[in-house]
Length: 388
Image (cartoon, rainbow, N blue to C red; front, side, top):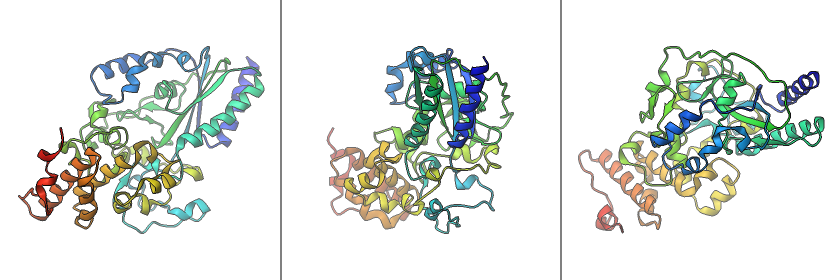
């Protein structure tokens, strides 16, 4: 037992040195939220994320991720909060920050990103690399042990285990909340067949009667506190969903082109935080990333060169261009009409239909009451002309 406690303490020290601000250990056990997951899936709230349905049973116990798992080490690494959340006197960052120079951003962003995507690389790569270092440490202490690092791609209910490990509580917006760090943080787990000294914390729910996150959702995606209908969530729509976004939802997406932080921006627990952020996760090139013209004029080769190792790669270029057209329509970007018209002849029917929606939106803003497209050959681009 003493050796187990020493191993735990050594892991925690190293985790802190690697940038993990929160650390906790829980014994491997059935996920307490598994039954809620089953009900959530039955209600269709997963949208088109069929990969969850296909491996539902695996979420029941960590043994499905690592055979013989005995301990789950839960960790959290903070990332930069959305600037709208920060106090007015807080420092904001531009691309110089990664060189150690902090300056104030003076540009007006054309669109909005979920701030987790504001860094210079995909957080999966960063966290996996650091988890591998912890795994090597654990293996050196327990030769022959089996360990596996997990960063939100394996069937593990991370938030449940993070709550049991004392990292925080699950808020009404379904995100893990911590009194010091708020919710802008990445969760990671290290599963092992070593029986480590577990924490036995009690973390109270500090949401109280607050419903700010539920009230702020632009698309009313929260069915109830802690119940999210992902098929209405802007993060799901802009990142996971590959099809044409329904007009009534497009109208409500404002200028979000990748992810959404609305429910985090309004959370009181995010207002005081000033955590240390890993250099790789600090905002960089935000003027470029939020430029709608940047996305609408991009080709595949450029997208690959710039964003192959970033979160945008998951959505792919057509998805980003679909999202950019929706933002252009919602913000009345008449200056981008030529770029939008180009997609009306695309081979991608989602882009064709989105360009039609956007052009109608622009025409409606320019000439209220008139939904007609201002194209030379309008009939060529109407929905009726599209193939079934």
